[in-house]
Image (tube, rainbow, N blue to C red):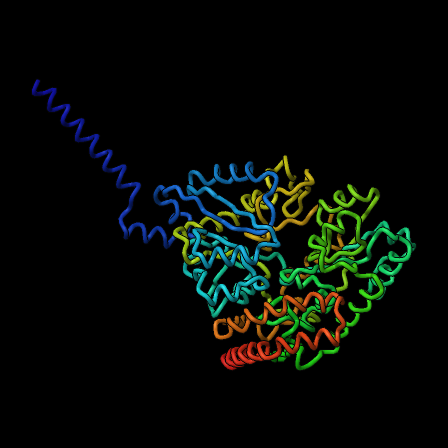
Amino acid sequence: MRHKKTISISIALVLILVILSGCSSTKPTDAQQSEADASRSPESAAVSEQKSERLDLVTLKIMLPGEKPSDYDEVKEEIERRLADTLNVKIDITYVPWSDLSTKTQVTLAAGENYDLIYDAPWLHMNQMVSAGYYEPLDELIERFGPTLKSTRPQQMWDANKFDGKIMGVPLGIFMVQGHSYLIRKDLREQLSLPPITTYEELLEYAYAVKREFKDIMPIIPASSDDEKGYAWAAYRQNDVIGTIRPTHANSNSLMLYYKNNDGKVYNLFEEKDPMIWGWITDARKLYEDGIIHPDVMSIKDWQGEFHSGKSAITLTRSFKYDYWQPAKVQENAPGGTLENVVLMDFTPGKNVINFQMDNFISVPAVSKNKERAIQFLNWANEKDNYDLIEHGIEGKSWQAIGDNKYKDLVTDSHGLASFSMIWNPEHERYPDTDEEETIKKKDFIKDGNNFTPDILTGFSFNSEPVKNEISQFNAIQSKYYSILFNGVGDPDGYFEKFRKEGQDLLAAIQQELQKQIDDFLASKQ
């Protein structure tokens, strides 16, 4: 019996040693871990940091613009399946209609609601929210948990999209500057026996011909809401001359303050009616008086919907090529309707001045309790296969990959979870299979920052806090006048004077503060 007991004890000791040895092999000493980490790439080290132990389950709350995609639940389930054994994350996305976006996001942040990721943009209220302290600085978090976030965006993009020297949101973009064009009804142009349009004058010739020959179709219906004032007809013209005239950091969607000449000066339209801007305004007035711009433009909320329903012949778009679903949408209401884009941008290298600033950001609210996991999730989302899933949906059902950089949609409704609002990067973005070679050349041109002249204000960010009250008051006044003026609805001279009387002192104060900060920025570079 004693012999058997000794054997049992020996076996037990061996088992304990084996178990202890196993535990030791899975958890090295700090010195061993440091040596191992030093031998790994930043990417693998980051993965190790987030996999080193089982993470508690976290549900990330995310707020994005737009409508909930048709396959949201299916894609969400696949995302969470892929994440279950790694980050152990579930996601809960709130989609906010564009018409409510500014108010909803502002109220959410001001109330300190529990969100972990939120969409913002310079044209929305990014500067104001940063100045008010609503967003978490991300430099350290991205350094630790975002190697893929860093590597999928060129350094130009990171350097130019900081706020007071800090990363306050992941810049989202696939190009160094956004493509723009006028989307028109190709079938109407062909019925009018007009050649392909290559100039603004030819675009207006087409618009007037539509007015004469197609009584049930309004030539132009631009945007009228204050949030979309960049799509008022006269304001949109700045996209034809990229960098010649451009909005300022203080009000990135308005031309009441503007930059020109790449000279670091802030110009005020109340003080100086720039001939180019004023020409756009008077041109819009003539189009409105001639019935080319819809007489009820200011009451039409879904201006793009009017185009898709066959009620207008020209719409404004932020791309060189229409989206895959648009032809079918138009043909539902206008059988035989076909589309084409009129691109008026000058593609001469160095011709256009840009500051490499992105139009879209995904930020982490300062109140988030899951900041590290939020960045880990974004890093995961920017990996190629996950990027495809989030942008396009389930492969083989919603879309089909064509090589490494193209795709074909298999359905016509919206799918995936997000693109420009959460993950866009130039490294993994695919071009649609409908893009012709000429369109691809245009897109490749604006993807390469070396094709542009850098704005001397590249990297500058405006701290709006000193004039936040003036900005708020001016924006309230501007909302009454801007879209009316830039869509030609109001008499330019008389209406402009009313606008000036109410807003000139406030705008002058904003201009003065902006110029002061710019002068300090430029002096620091010398």
